[in-house]
Image 1 (cartoon, rainbow over the protein chains, first blue to last red):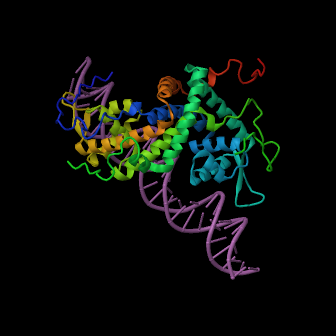
Image 2 (cartoon, rainbow over the protein chains, first blue to last red):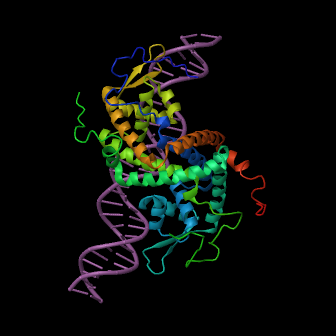
Amino acid sequence: MQTISNQKSDLSKADTSAPESHADQLLQLESWLPYRLFRISARVADVLNAYYGPKFGFSRSAWRTMAIIANRPGASAKEICQAGGLDQFSVSRAVKQLVELGYARRQAGRSDRRYAAIELSESGWSAFTEISDVAKRLDADLTSAVSEKELAALDSILTRLDNASAGILARGWRGAADAPVDPADATAKRDGR
Amino acid sequence: MQTISNQKSDLSKADTSAPESHADQLLQLESWLPYRLFRISARVADVLNAYYGPKFGFSRSAWRTMAIIANRPGASAKEICQAGGLDQFSVSRAVKQLVELGYARRQAGRSDRRYAAIELSESGWSAFTEISDVAKRLDADLTSAVSEKELAALDSILTRLDNASAGILARGWRGAADAPVDPADATAKRDGR
DNA sequence: GCTAATTGTTTGCATAGTGCAACCATATGC
DNA sequence: GCATATGGTTGCACTATGCAAACAATTAGC
């Protein structure tokens, strides 16, 4: 392929070669777990999006929203937010899109009319069924090279990773910058050189 | 939490209840493997982004690009594209951003001056080192509830999933809409066996 | 009842990211 | 030289996102 002979032959300035500071080893994106997970999911999501996008005319957020209300008919926007990890605005816009396209209906809640109960229309259900059918096939395709037993193990691991990631998100980067891995560098972050 | 069994409690309109068409069971977003992977990676990526974004002033694409050229000093834009699954435009803009911020340098290749060999500057290395340090801690944090042995299994599984996802991407949704899952699909999904 | 605070949701706007066509620059083949 | 291919960039339209502010319905205080 690309024979790119551009090694750093002519651009070796002797100091652009390595961090040197305190790296045991360079972080490699390709082997960084979150990135690996990202790649797999992004590819599949792209493919699924290429299916429902042109065919039904809605966005990723709308699809996520649709999938959520399919499992929780009559959910309010707020519930959708929490269930799908989406923010209020995305959900509001996604619902708007779905309603405009005729895939969903909004009904003011009976007891509290601030809540909008959202549900799929018939064409919404039919779209959802179609899309989720493709989604299932993609899933089957994805996992075809993995045994049942491994899938069970994966399930268990992912559950824990999911929990851990929730914790990470809650703590923010400070949570990771302080505590683990290396206790030695609280204040003296001044790697002045 | 309610186990959503598609009970359309009080807003029943009698026909908004279920797809019925050919669903063995509703697709549940939360248990759909790609979505589970997405959630974990998105959370971690968000946290990391919240670190480097404000602190160094560059975008996600720029971080990805930086991580790639850190491991491939002097790579051309094209190589970065392939290595990072980014498109030409993102990379071009990301490099521009990194160069403008002083984290990277561009040098025309000597044999073929169409190629731009990209490398990190000293401040680029220092930024990268800092960020990857946080990334590593996030990773450690993420996997803290998973044993070494399980991690090895995960690694193996993810490798296969990654390959499968590449195949899925290459084939597109048509590849999934036709073939797999169940030879006796759609119309007659035999319940017994 | 009337007003103020609260909660759920929407909208306008500014900004950031993405996709695409057209473009510039360099290299190669005739 | 001229045509063509390749690497890379840029302008532009479009989409997505974040945030303030608005709106609407409800509840609390008086």
